[in-house]
Image (cartoon, rainbow, N blue to C red; front, side, top):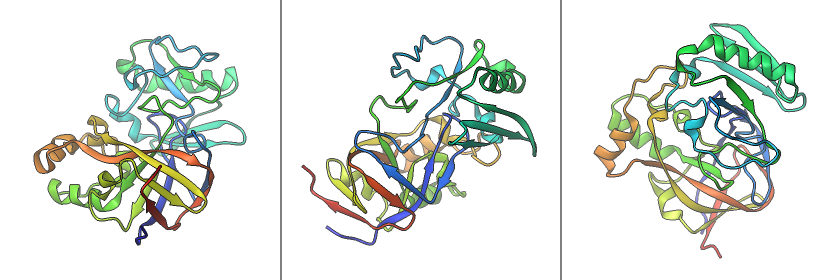
Length: 257
C-alpha cells in the first residue's frame, strides 16, 4: 500500500528527560533504537543499575518529565563525537562535560544538585551502558508520532499542542488522524529501512509539560481519555531492516511478515 505519508522530522533524545536533537538524517540498524537515543540517563537516587550488565529499569528511577517538569526549562546539546553534553539555563551555559569521563560526569551531576535539590532522592548520577537505551520500554524501538493525531488532540484541548510533548523519534505527516493505530503488526518502508509497528504508546503526565518553558499546563492524558476513550498517542516500531532515513522520505505500508 502506498500513500502520501512522509517523515516530517527526526528527533533523538541523547539524555533521558532532556532536550531533543533534530537530525536531518539517521542510520537505522535492525533491533536498535535511533542512534544515541536515550543513550544516557541521570539516576535519581541509587537504583541498582550495573553499567557492565545494563538492564531495563522503569523511568521513575531517573530524572524525567513525568515528575520533574523543570527539566524542560533547560536547553541541552550533545556532541556525539566528543560525548560532550552542554546545558544552558536562563540563557547562559550552566554546565558542560564529557559524559564518558569521570570529571565530565561530575560536572553534570553537580549542576543537577544545584538545579533541583528538592526533587532528588539521592545523589544524581549519569548512567551509561554499552549498547543500552534508557527507553520507557524494555525493547529497543523507534517511536512514531502522527502529526494529524496531534492536531486532533490540539482541537480537543482547545490550545496549541507542540508535538514535542510526545518526545517521539519520527514525526509523520500525510496519515489521517489515528491511522497509526491501524498499523499494528504491519511494516513500514522508509528508503531501504523497514520497521514493524508493535505497540501503541500510552501517555503519562510528561505530556502535560510545555517543552519550551517547563510548566505543567495541559492535562493531555485526561484530554485523550475524555475525548477519544484512550490515553494513547503514537506507536512504537522495531527496526527489522537497516538503512538511512532522512527528512522528507516517503513512507509505504505493507502487511508485514
